Amino acid sequence: MTVILIKDPLDLSRCYPAFLELRPHLQSEESFIKQIMQQQSEGYKIYAIQEDDEVVACLGLRILTMLAWGKILYIDDLITRAAVRGKGYGSLLIKHAIKLAHELNCDQVHLDSGYIRHAAHRLYINNGFEFNCHHLALKIKHHC
Image (cartoon, rainbow, N blue to C red; front, side, top):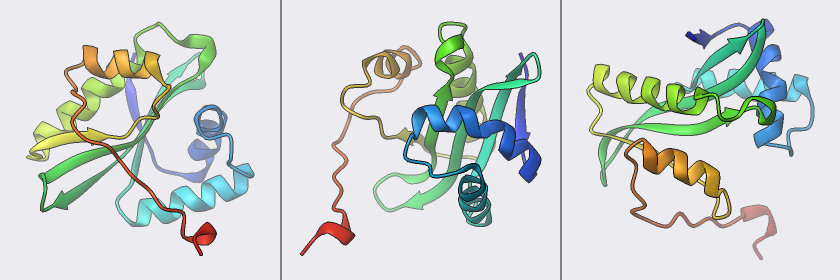
């Protein structure tokens, strides 16, 4: 299994089905590619694993510097397609993120995960992560 860096729109298109499983609100492949290209201009990177020429797992990340934690690698997205879960792809991508964090002299690796994503939580904990804060959000468009 090899982790590859995704750069061009054609490869992004191949990642869309995986992202759609994690982010079902994505409107279309075209809007997905446009959004990812915008995020890439801000430092976002996607790494992927292929199986039989199909993208089966993806890792989206960025490097941030924050007063609270210093220089961190932040995992925005970690997806393994439902049909291939349990093959170690998630752990491989997490290990890749940790390796990148070391190479880039990051102090920590962070991610947010939904409350009911228990299988994902087991994966993160098995790879050394700890629950250490609550993430809160306020949707501006719906706030009066």
